[in-house]
Length: 194
Image: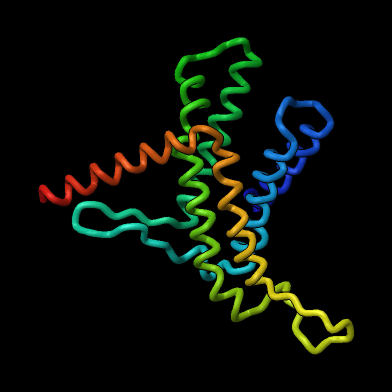
């Protein structure tokens, strides 16, 4: 319940940006908040049996294994908010510890990809349940002669991540891609050694 409340109240961030209370870009803030609300209410809450007990294994071998789950999603969300609000609290207190500045402007290099990939993993895990249960879907025949399938909407929403993620990530997208390639190279070298 606290997660539902805290994420739903984030709509106020969009309102604050729109009213000029904060200097955040309205569309980027709205996109981030909408994404989290959709994942929470439209995926995790609709298919809890799939999203709370399952994982998506990214890679698995004797040396390295990484799994995306609700835990990685919540970790990315929580850490990013702790860093952001901690930075703003320090700024308001006219303190700027170097670690907070560094975390604020570097933490997202790891947390954004972790959060986005975990969000996509939640959709992947929930899709079979959504297809089976058909929540928020309208099937034919009906008086209006109109059909809509929520699982198709989910797939279209995932497709919207492709152009949206690099824009939210900005120029650092290429830096993170380079870091990811270096990590993969490192993993390959470690696997070749062992």
